[in-house]
Length: 475
Image 1 (cartoon, helix red, strand yellow):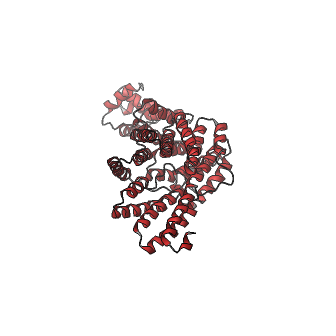
Image 2 (tube, one colour; image 1 turned 180 degrees about the vertical axis):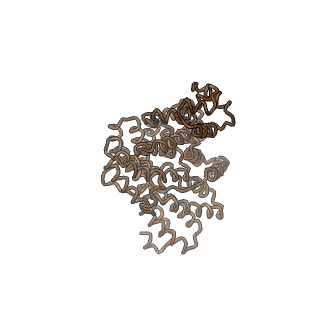
Image 3 (tube, one colour; image 1 turned 90 degrees about the vertical axis):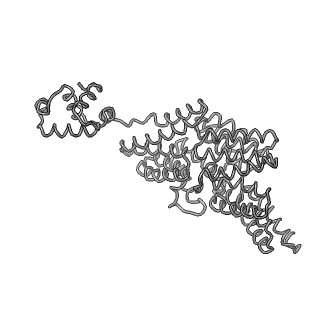
């Protein structure tokens, strides 16, 4: 009706309302089409408030489409224009949601952006100050939750928990069901990150019930996917299948971050059910349908790399798994996703071990263990800290990396068995000639062994070697 009224401003506002409805129903590309037409009309009218609000709507629509880079661009433009217009309400909402800057922690199946934690927090802190000053409690609740999200993405779990819980408290106090749902969802995914899967399930079940009540299609899909994933970790595959099937079907689209999360959970479940080839076909489809780029950039999406590497490894293709995982580790590091980084490190260790590369596998697992320990040490709550350490250890527990020879080399600072024997003779005070006679070797060979021992132990005298050998029981 609006276009027939010969009133382009009304038509543009109507287009935005219809577009926003499509976005909430997770039809983001329909939404983008409507918003682009609204933007054209507002620009023709030079209606700056209309332009600012449309840029804001394009920001969330591109986010739901999985086009995080475009989302970040539109939010930046809307925030700048809201500042010029001195529109505090518009600024607060655009700045709060746009502060995530394409955060890849929730929507893990698309290309993440690279944004610094301090930049995300700076935006949140500005919104938080302003919302408290003017008493806008819903924005305060959302911003606290979003700060928790930003901290969690970077593995800063202690402040993440504090902010997300504060966001939940405010949302419950003002009885804002949608933001209560959001806070429970963030807390659920955060507990998934630290391997507290029982607690994750409690939060995600609550969030899913609220998402259904409020008809939030995208949040319903996110909660379903993460809840299924937590149940898989708890080995409750029957319940995971039941939960996932309530929102996912074979004809679900591969577009939209919520739908893609469901497909990712389906791949996880197939892997857990022992169907790696079926999972691999699905993962390849997810990779090939990532918005704005093709297969050659799949290594930049750590979550899909993790799934693909696991499917390849379980299909008996260890070498291909290694080739997939190694660049994915770099992608996780660049995108500031340490929880995925250490899990990828464990998977790389498994793949290298299966490919017969024990030394490289040991190195990969050492790095993964150190990163998991660093993340765990940042947790203030002992139960969560121990739970993460236990999960990290369990993921590496059944890998036999060391032969007796390799274990001995590790125990004795890398000295070979022959070098250890020479060190034992040195501990008895023997000269090189005496050692050569005892071992039936040339004196020059013994000299070489002694030089190697001094180098490996970083010692300068035989006396130091003698003390070390005695301490190690080599006498």
